[in-house]
Length: 383
Image 1 (cartoon, rainbow, N blue to C red):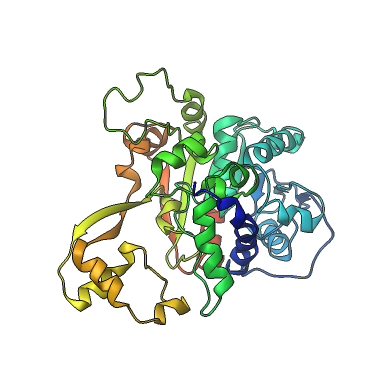
Image 2: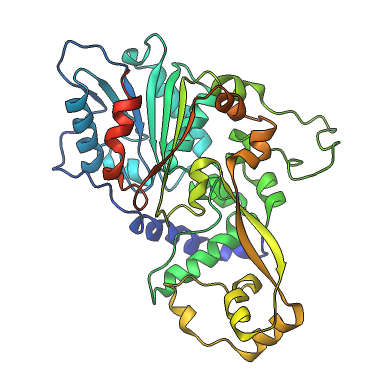
């Protein structure tokens, strides 16, 4: 971590509110209903119960969540639905998606689910996670899974973390500064204990730091500090992966991973399919066009919507590029090429070889469910 980066912590915290404002609202809205934690429709059928964990900037009883639950109950009469909460007060539950220790929160949720008799059914309950709620439910499966999950469905979740903060609106200087400050302080002790998004921030430029400092995502992915090493003796110091995680995940009936085609909130969006960003070094030519296209690799990269992108390229920057003639080009490591998959650290390959891992697309931006939710619910919920 950069020395003195703690000075940026107020700015780092401010990005969380900015982050929430860029998350598209779920497209199912209604009037606010009374504040239930359990939802049961009146019918004589006995469908498998469902647990929902909402995403960042949402709450367990927001209008969108309540409308979604109501729509599911119309579609599946008699289904019992539990919406995960960390506080019964709506505002505090929403804040818990930004601030806190996610390991502690998952333990609280595990106790919450264990206390609900309606979830203790043969074969387990179905679980649906929206955005970050998806990897949190996966952590529940791997660490606890009592009562067990039957089908795990994740919409736009960050299974391999995020490697960038959502883009800023033009001329939003605070957002631009906060994006940079967040990267500077994300692996500090304070951020890792208090900022939820920092606990699944996976910087491809600083994998060793990520593995050493982050106590959530590397754990549920069974990554170890030596995971980035190519040495066959990487685990010679007594490090051992948690076999329970693989045992529990492979107990699923099905794992349904849904990626939004136009997702700009999750970076990279392929994280929803266990993809991660790969940084490759490429030697480029010396033309002005090539320089303009590649200048981001030298640390001057801005989003198209970033007002600073309108500033002219300085001769000093061009000279720096001409001296190195190198820039970084971002690629994606797909699920099937991840060591996590090939070495079966969490049982993902075992599930896939069994034919029960489904990589699905949903047309639209992050958490725009209208194009795909009906098919998903009909196929995987309540059976």
